[in-house]
Length: 366
Image (cartoon, rainbow, N blue to C red; front, top):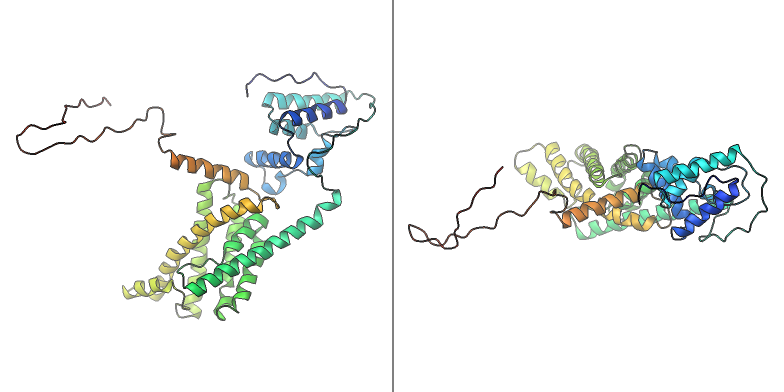
């Protein structure tokens, strides 16, 4: 895209002309679905600092901008639509100016032309509430199942991990912290039938994890980049370790029979107090568990977003891909002045004999 604006027709005399030209721009960009335009606008607003909760415009509002017969159009929204369809900043400003001119100089409304059939099914106004809530409820139930499966797997195989908060993390990040709390409490209530009564006490650990994941993602914006996302999972691990250690020391004399308590016994055998041994063991195993959980959640959110809007996912996944590419090609991005190091020079033999393959090297100038 160049700085020179493409030919945007001179100031339109009516909103209908703007709507028709905007529709042509949508078709020229590849017949972009209205839902995709909404997603792009939300992602652009989030990158410019708008809170995720208010960054997403209503899909019907976006669709109305393409509809003829309007008597009022939001110039800023039209500019945003043109921008996400490939227009430059100069072109987006021209689109906004056209809307302002049409508002100042209204013309008699022409006969309404037949509307082009939308490329994606548009929801009715009444569609948004019930199906959306139904999908959220289904996701919460699926998250509870994930937690219980992880809980059961660890209990049966004696793994030194936990795996009982994967669903908690998905719900907290995708739906909010209190949805994660609901998933966590339900998991530990079901866990009573899998292990013993200690499960209900550790519901507090699940609650703390849900709150840190949820508020960390939404209020602290720790899901914007991959390093921040890793930090978020580390914060969850440390928070859960503090709570779990308190419960273990005060209520269970340091352990409940979990496989990770081998590390606790080893630390205690080194002369550490019980609280220090329990905390050290929990931090080590919780860090491993929550980082692994974070990667599982990242993959799961890619599937969840197909039927529920997941804040931050597009920005986060794009940053993850950048980091993966950097890892796969470390020379890339090292700077134009980077070059491979000199090859190792083999020196054959020892003593005063001749050395083969040796050549005098002139050091590089600094």
